[in-house]
Image 1: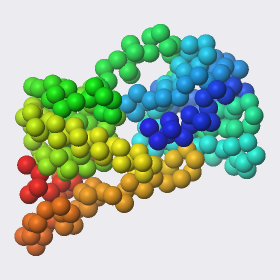
Image 2 (image 1 turned 90 degrees about the vertical axis):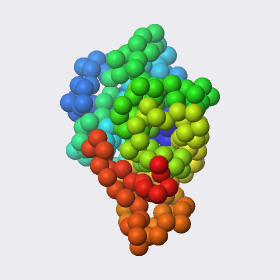
Image 3 (image 1 turned 60 degrees about the vertical axis):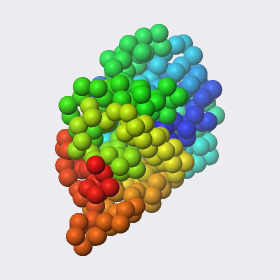
Image 4 (image 1 turned 135 degrees about the horizontal axis):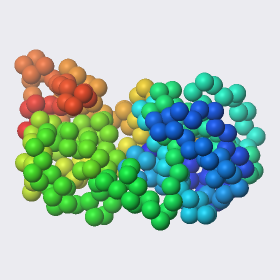
Length: 276
């Protein structure tokens, strides 16, 4: 979502919404019936994110909360581009004065586009229980350790819990645990002290590198400007079941290389020797 925000900001911030075309109201949550009327003629003040939610602030203190679900995307068409006719999964078009258009598509319809107000955003049901942002200055090893105290689940499951840490997905959790040398099966409550510091540092380095690479394009992710991310070229464990571990000298013939297990319904990739 951070790469989406970075692409949308220069197009939408300061722009006036000329029209909003809604073709599908039945998403994860229904698109509000007044969505069009509330947005047309409004100026967009800010495009940002909280965890995996897109936050678009308007000049009347209204706020759009968006989410891309599992397969959604936002696509930017600049004024003068040849905009294709909408397909069956192209649910909402945001047209701005000057000719630019942003199209929200979502084949599985797990995403959402709803409205709230700036004054109550922090208390919105989707936002209020989110954990700290991992790239904010206040996300320290001590802060992470505090969030994990008493947590009986695996560290892998805990990091995917948006109430513990906001915005982490399966790929980046696997890569972060590998870099920190922590087993995904370790109890979260036991990740304290130096382990928590190493994990915090690994999370931040993985996310920073992924943002610089435009995210990871495997399956559905394409940036709003149409470019692919390429962080997948830097994966050390994710999707590499059976491959040799890239940073230890374990005997591949003995260990079988990187392992894949299922945790909370998601694939986990790790090196049993490096990660303890």
